Length: 334
Image 1 (spheres, rainbow, N blue to C red):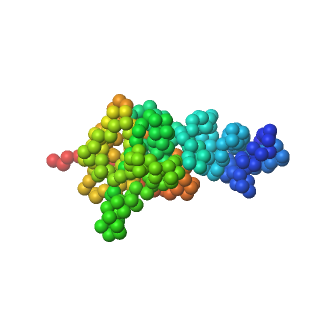
Image 2: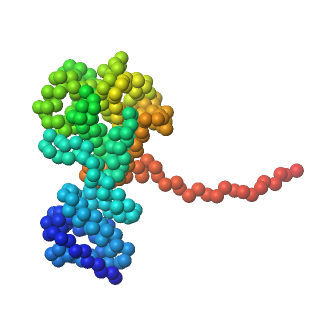
Image 3: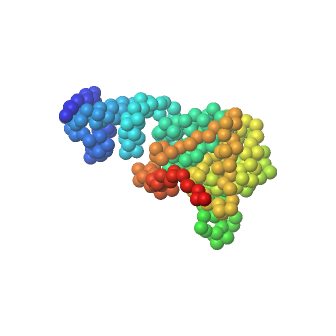
């Protein structure tokens, strides 16, 4: 049995570290079978050597985050625990450096995982970035944040957001209204991200001026998009013809981000996903980056990560032990 004590300078920092009703401490105690007791500005950890070491490193990381004024929630605690288990908790510091942009309500937008950090760096350093990963990894949200940041810095004069209007169990013809009303539900996630970044009034102003365009992918045909930040969302539902059409729309001084989840393809069985094909064709092409986010990069409710992992296990079951092949030589009868 080992016992260690951590000293903190400010009780206020420990309040953020412990969480509401000490929920963060319980997460650490579950991850590393230890007992944690707080005494003012001291935290006492007891348990087996390796478990105590992991808990101490996690708590020290959380205290450092609180001292920098970083918000601490369940997702961040669990992510830090996973990094400690891989001896990579020192990399957490890189997540606190760069703010992509500030939302209309003054909230800073930045990477919350190492995978998201690489994704943002790829967008900044490449003309075309393909971000692939499960739901909740921030693919679209961070791409919109980068687009707004580039627009505010006057690096581009337009933001163009598009996605294919692929029917998933419902028919467009049965939806009420004209064509725009029919496709609006497919574009809603893009609207929501822009509203949060810019505010409803600013968004409406830029939309009226033509500085922002949100439209179905079919509307991109025949156009050349210069001086624009272009985001193609839900790209797993593009056909190979649509993907080639979209990629060839790019003009001068433009940046393109393509996002998608290849586990959620709604195309007919006889159609090849343009995203899957593009990843194969464009891999290792200069100035094109392909980022693969995983379940560890999910920043939504922790249950989302568990659901994704459960589906991955179901789709890729472990190989069953196969009987050894019969190596006996057959004797030919005369």
